Figure 1 (cartoon, rainbow, N blue to C red):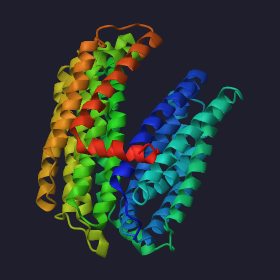
Figure 2 (cartoon, rainbow, N blue to C red):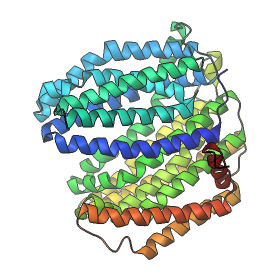
Figure 3 (cartoon, rainbow, N blue to C red):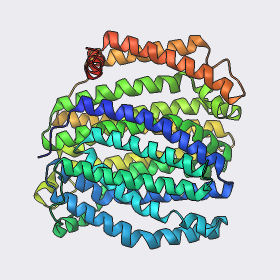
Figure 4 (cartoon, one colour):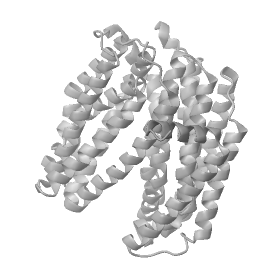
Amino acid sequence: MPGEIRLVRSNVILYSSLIVRLAVSVGFTIIVARKLSVEEFAAFGLILAFATIAQVITTIWVFWAQRWASRGDYEGVGAGLALTLAYSLIILPPLYLGFAALESWALGISFDLTAGGWAFVILAPIQYYLSNITLVVRPGRVGLMRVVYEVLRFLLGYILVVPARWGFGGAVLSMTAASSITGLGYIILLDRAGVREGGVNWGLAAYWLRNWRLPLLYMVSRIMRLFNRPYISWLTGSSEAVAYLNVAVTSETPLMMASSLTSMPMYSRILRKPRAEDVEVSLVLYLIFTGMLSSIFIGAPRAIADLYNPRYLASATALQLVAVLALFSGVANIIRQALLALDQPEATMSRIDRNTLLSRTLEYSALLAVAPYVFAAPLVYMLRGDPVSSLNVFLLVLIAFSLLQLFLFAVWLRRRLYFTLENREALAVAGAFAGSLLYLHVSGVNRHLYPEFWRELVPLTIHSAIALLVYSVILVVFSPTARRLVSRGLEVVGLR
C-alpha cells in the first residue's frame, strides 16, 4: 500500500503551484505570440490542440490505472504504461501526420510546420500518464513537477526563441525538452515511492479495454467543455460571441484546475478507505481557494475584460457567469469523484453492470454534461442576432444543469457516506467573499477604465491585491481551517 496522503499539505502545495504555473504559462504564451508569424502561431496552436486530444484518449486506461495504483496494486501501473507506450509509439505517429496533412490542405499551413511537432505529441501522452499515476500516490510532488515543466518551458522558450532566434523550431523544442525532463522526473519520483511496474499483466490491460465504456463516459464532461466555442460559433454564426467567450473562460481555467487538483488526493484516499472527513476537508479547502479567486472575477469583470481589449467590455457579464459556473461545477466534480471512489466493482475483476453506483454516476455525469447543449440550442439560435444575450443565456443554462448535477450527486453521496459542510466554515468563506466584493465595488475598479494595457493593469493589480487581503483577513478571523493553514505555513518557514 502506498504511503498516506496528507490532504491539507497536498492541496496547499497544489494550489500554490497552480498560481505559479498560470503566471509562467502566460509569459511563455506571450513570447510565442509576439515572436512567431501568424502561420507559425496557428501551427503551434494546432500542435497543442492535437496533443491535448491525444492525452484525453488515454483516459480509457488511465482511469483504471489510477484506481489500481491507489490501492497499491502496481501491476496496473505496468499495464497502463504498456498501453500508453504502444499508443504513443505505434498508433499516434501516423494519426498525427495524417492530421498535419489535413490541416495543411484545409488551412493552407505548411505541412512541415505542423508535422514538426511530432516529438512533443508522442511524448505528451507518456508524460500525462506518469503525472496522473503520481497524482494518486504523491499528489504534492505533481504540483512541484508541473511548476518545473512550466519554468523549463518558459526559460528554454525565451532562450531559443529570443536570443537564439530559432523561432517556431525553438518554441516546439522548448516544449519537447521540458516534457522529456519532467517525464524522467516522474519516473524517479514513482521509483522512490516504491511504485514499480512489476511486469505487465496483459489480462488486466484486456479487462480495461473491454470496459472502455465507463472511461469514455468519464471523458464526456471534459470534451463538452472544449466544445463550447465551436457550439457558440455554429449556432450564432458570430465571431463576436466566440471572442467574448474567449475572454470569459479566463475565470474558468484556474477554478476548474483547482477542482481537479483537490479531488484527486481525496479520490485516492477514499479508494483505500472511505472517510466522510476527506470529502468535508476537500470541499472546505476548495471553497477557501476558489472563493478568493472568484471574488476577483465576479467583482472586477469590466476591468479584466478591458485589460484584454476595450472592445470586449460586453463580455463582462459572461465572465462573471463563467466564474459562477466553474465554482458550482468544481464542487460537483469533487462530490462526483467521491462517488466514483466509493464503488469498486473492478477490484475483483468482475463484470461491471450498469446498475452499479460507478456506472450510474458516470452515465448521469455524461448526460448532464450533454443535456444543456441540447436544451440551450433553440434559445441561443433565436438570440443569434444579439451575441451578448445568446452567450449569457447559454451560460445560464449551463449553470442550471451544473446545479442539478451538484444537488443529485450530493444526495447520492450522503446516502452512502454521510458528510456535512460546517456552517462556520461556509459562513466564513461567504463573509470573506462578500467583503472582497464590497471593496471592489467601493474602489470603483469597474468604473475607471483605461484603453492602454499597462495603465489598466496597474490599478487592477493594486485593487485585486487589496481585495485578496480583505478576503484573507476576514477568512482567518472566522475560519478555523484558515487559521490552521496559516499556523502550518509559519511552522514550515520557521517563524513559529
